[in-house]
Length: 246
Ligand SMILES: NC(=O)c1ccc[n+]([C@@H]2O[C@H](COP(=O)([O-])OP(=O)(O)OC[C@H]3O[C@@H](n4cnc5c(N)ncnc54)[C@H](O)[C@@H]3O)[C@@H](O)[C@H]2O)c1
Image (tube, rainbow, N blue to C red; front, side, top):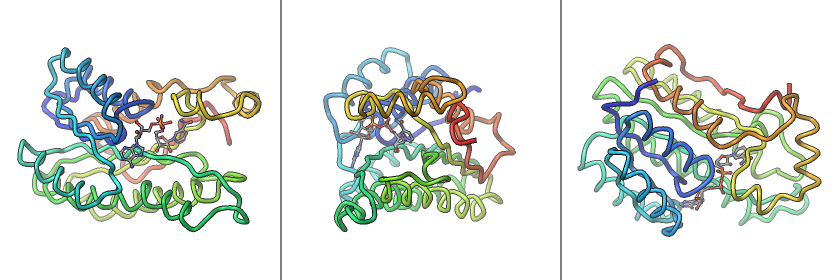
């Protein structure tokens, strides 16, 4: 599963699944471009990974500022071709159809759909010219089966699957694969901080493997899909759920 010789851009790399991706990718020899809006956590990750010998570029920005995102991506692109993209950054605005605000709905669609599409539009052309590229989009099992009280998030994550499959069809003949991972409950700082214990217990009791995922367990699947070893896999929406939802 070597990533030596590749440069990966990971969004939301400051903590959780994105941070675990940065760590796993660096351990496999990839050079990294790490984006996050939290300068403190991003610096912590980048300082730690610089010691691994990988080249690390870390940029703090709010990805939903598309003008800024474009100028940052143009500047990092000038430092070498980015041939792996992990669209991971995200957040939730819980709410039923009766309660969700238009602002909340659009914000969730923006970070999970508009931002990944925009980054793909900027990075895909050079992957296609190089005849090699990997895009891994982080969806959710809710994108497949829906979530009660999670109308915006489930809609956005279902959209991520549609985006993945459409770009996979467009880019396949140029050696670019595009896949989605669908995590179940994963022990990230946001889940630890925001999810009530009773909900965690409910998910765990419904999970055949009987526990949450660790972020590294999701990151290793993403790294596999980003590697040469996954050369004949494109357009999949792969659940990483410990059997939840089967
Ligand atoms: N943790 C889970 O149980 C779980 C389950 C299914 C899917 N996911 C998905 O996995 C991905 C990562 O989740 P996580 O739990 O690691 O999240 P997290 O909240 O722990 O980390 C997300 C990171 O993204 C960054 N980020 C968020 N919005 C940003 C923005 N506008 N600009 C720049 N950076 C931004 C945050 O600063 C943070 O560092 C998300 O897409 C999430 O929807 C998570």
